[in-house]
Amino acid sequence: MVKKFAPLPFALSLSKGLQFAMTLVAACALSACGVAKLGPDYQRPAMDLPSSIPAPGQATEVNWLTWWKGFSDPVLDALLQEAATNSQDLALASARMAEARAILDQNQSNFYPTVDLNASSLRQRTSQNSATFFPSVGAYTNSQQLGLSASYEIDFWGKYQRADEAARARLLGQAAARGTVLTSLYANVAQSYFALRALDAQQALAEQTLSSRQEALRLQQLRFQSGVIGEMDLRQAESEALSVQATLQQTRQNRSNTESSLALLLGRKPAEILHPVFVRGADVGMLYVGQVIPANLPSDVLALRPDVVSAEQALIAANADIGQARAAYFPKLSLTAGYGQQSQDLVNLFDPASMVWNLIGNLTQPIFRAGAAEAVVAAANARQQQALAQYTQAVQNAFRDVHDALNNVAAGREIVSTTAQRIEALRTSLRLADLRYRAGYAGYLEVLNAQRDLAQAQTGLLEFQRIQLSALVTLYKALGAGWDAKI
Image (cartoon, rainbow, N blue to C red; front, side, top):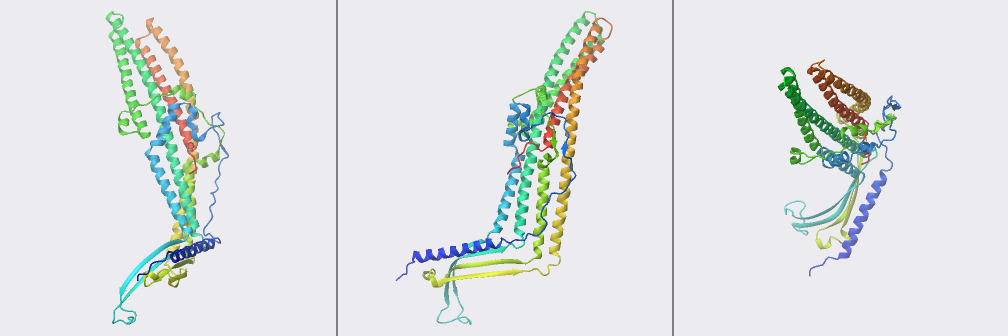
């Protein structure tokens, strides 16, 4: 007669095993409450920082997270959104951040015991000539086993807490590194867009100037044919028209290259990079007028700059690594427990008499490691000093970047204002030169020089406006604007 398995004893045995394992989990978790963390607790390095940063602007309220909206150009807003969605550099930074988060989750598993379900079935033959052979048992034996095992290392010295602290800091560091990519992406897209709008304006100016020069050349040809002027004046007019045409060709080349660069920043498809198409928004003059220059900057705003945040988180992680390294000097206590059922026959496996359990405590105190522990601690201290130097340098670079950006913004405004005044003076000079030429008091070269100077100044004004806009974007980037520190 074949004996059937009874489901009730199996359920009771499994329930007892789970209760035993959960009791062990709770006991081990409670044992970690009195942890004495080794190593130094992090304190931000003291630095002699100014209380505020003088700025030339008048805006006291700036939305740092979306600074580009101050230009009031929906096309620019859409381009930045497109770049943030499609950028492969940003995707790479996001993947690294996800990896850091997974490492943090992995480290946090050290705070809990490991629990495993074990099942085995063994059939073996014993030599009948061995000392362990018993005729009453026979040469063949079976062993069936099912049970739970749990193990836990008590974190007396805070090794795992320091590891969690370091992993958390590295996650925040990767988030800040992503912020660095994001702020750079926004700045590059905005600056490329401003460059494109400036080249659009320069191309329109060059086309207008070329049309004017070609008309002047036509009139000079008629005058030459009538004998009013000599060949010198004709060739000068022809040369000037060809010079403007070459400038126009170069401007179109630069404009096309800028479009492909912007398409690449936006993460567009290869076909769209080969033949880029862009909607235009505000012209460079309107963008220049609409700029918002921040003022009254507190120096602690630089603490939110992503590269400074990343450097500080690296310092926090390196500081926590020292505590992990020092834990190697102290004893390690591990608990291992097992609970299950064991029987020669499968039919008796869930019999209460088949229950087995064990509880083992293991204490290990390092005695001799040939200087290995000391070397690990020394290396951790050296890495902490490296991180400190990098953090200090990041803060220094932040203040220098802000200083240079503010200087460029202030100087750019003055240069644009001076150039605008120069253009008005050159317009008057051209009008007078043309009157002198028509009256016979000056040669045509004087008119050409006046025309050339005015065209160059007008082109320069567009370029200076672009430079000023680019400097303002650089200032926002230097201040760390455009990213959110939350993860």
